[in-house]
Length: 575
Ligand code: ADP
Ligand code: MG
Image 1 (tube, rainbow, N blue to C red):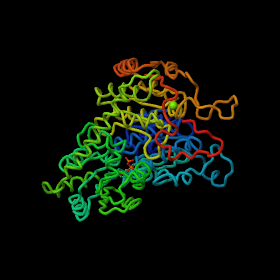
Image 2 (image 1 turned 90 degrees about the horizontal axis):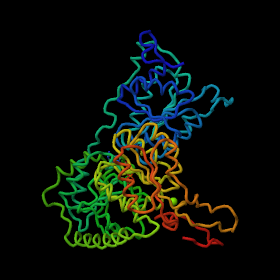
Image 3 (image 1 turned 120 degrees about the horizontal axis):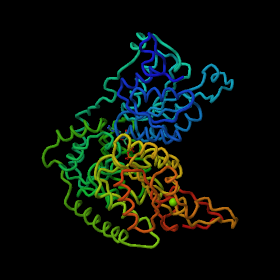
Image 4 (image 1 turned 30 degrees about the vertical axis):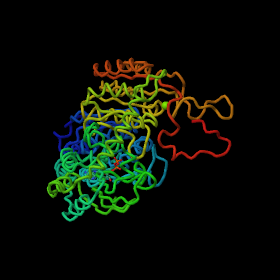
């Protein structure tokens, strides 16, 4: 039975369904991403009837990815609603990914009868979901009484957005959803959270230590990570960088925090600055695999580090940190700006010149590649076309996943504004594409271009139907080289089955979206790609561009060849 809004309010009782919706609304939650089914179908209906926007997906992983990216963009927990056991587990990949990336998200799932689940008596969709979620989340809660729903939602919000944000699981048993409660007790039980992500003011000593270290530097460098983007302290970050004149390197999702064409960007001289900087300031960036753990030949072994991070336990995780600043980035940057004396930090001219020279050299080399017009297209010629269209549309969000499509896309597509590049992130995960695109389009109301490898697209491709059902302004560009990495591998046994990395050659992904009344384009040269993308964006309607590129374009594992162990026996290296 569908519980109509306020149906019970005129009476003296309410129930778990209403209490969940009331608790979410009380805390400013305006959107839920999910897949309906037992026992949460009525929860989705009721939320919609009560003015919460409900976006229904085809698979929980994409709903979860949409919630996670909504959390990243808004600093409010993104909410994903899933059914019990299998639906819950489908959503868990996204919840674990949110935790790994530091995105605030709450997965709310219905669950089966606890008395049967706990005795393992074989219930419909039986699983001990709260405990299953624990290793992958910041916190995992179960609500077993209707009067605890308000507390459960409040605790989940605090856990998701405080400190380093992350994924939180909230288990609602079918019993608790259906349970009734008197209206007075119900309204007393709700909790409006106050200041769930409080500022974390830095110790003035730590600010002085960091500035003194930078003042002694000859070759300083700042690395901006997605924590810096998340903090939404854009003006303070930019002002600190410009006042000190320190060159900076954006991690991929921090691109656009300052426009990529900023003269202090050292992105085009990355290996030079990593290997030669003597003082490196990490701002919301971890020294994880994406920065070679701060070790190895890419890095100067004598460099000293400043690290600005909200998480005290991140400090010293890989390299010794000489000047930790444990704080939220907005507060830390304001404190730096207040403490900085004019001219106190002054990168040496020789350092700035060396970076400028390397940038020019690398930019010219890249320009020569981008200017080629091979037939069939390769990553360079097709991404150049996309880059040029997007240069005129700085409002557009870019989602990017794949192996080579990701690596080339990151380097070639310039970002002009903060938080508009959304990609595989800390795990290097595939399958975020359509979920991130939908989440970004829904919370921003802006157009999204999803630049997808053909293999990566496959993980969430069915969400094209979701995109079309909600009429979202999303253009998907599938880089079709017919394979994982590339499309020309062979079955090394000589057998009839295709190679493990090969996908269907000549697949027409554009026809998929036509099944849902979206617009498909099939392009084989940069000029038609430019045209298709321009037309698709101007229409503001869902579109998919099948972008046919050379099956021999791309390398195995993209830029991660060092992470791909290969058999030394009887396995000729193909790529
Ligand atoms: P990237 O992959 O871009 O290098 P990471 O995800 O590795 O970025 O690092 C982000 C870091 O930012 C995490 O260590 C996280 O604790 C930190 N962080 C997140 N939000 C904030 C914030 N508001 N203030 C300070 N640090 C933050
Ligand atoms: Mg491919």
